[in-house]
Image (cartoon, rainbow, N blue to C red):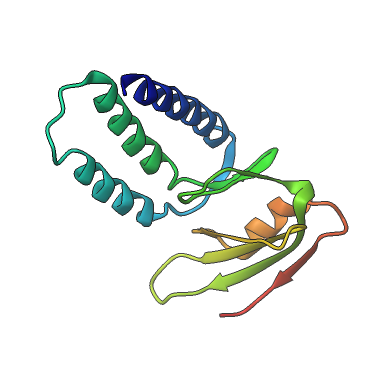
Length: 155
């Protein structure tokens, strides 16, 4: 049983290195997904209910909780878009076919924008930013191909 847990430890460690590398490439950081923090707390508490004195298991739980917390971070990078959430990863700019920027104006708060990326696969990815839509549009202008349509939506 310890062999399986050690294998999972190595997989989680590789996932952490992957996340650290791509998150270091972020130039415009998206708002943190609080759901990742809540999920990490619930699963971490559930895994630690029963006392276990096996070191590989303790490492596995620590790595899982750390990875889950890290997966709440996303943003727009120089080479790729870094996705946040439980199934986080990266999205290459060449896979994007359409972008919708939705400005959100709340009284007494800074500008916000929801960005929806449509990919060449039937997939939509949303990231939220605490910036103006014009700033995001200007940044994406240099990264996206000329064929990609950028649309300004409304709430």
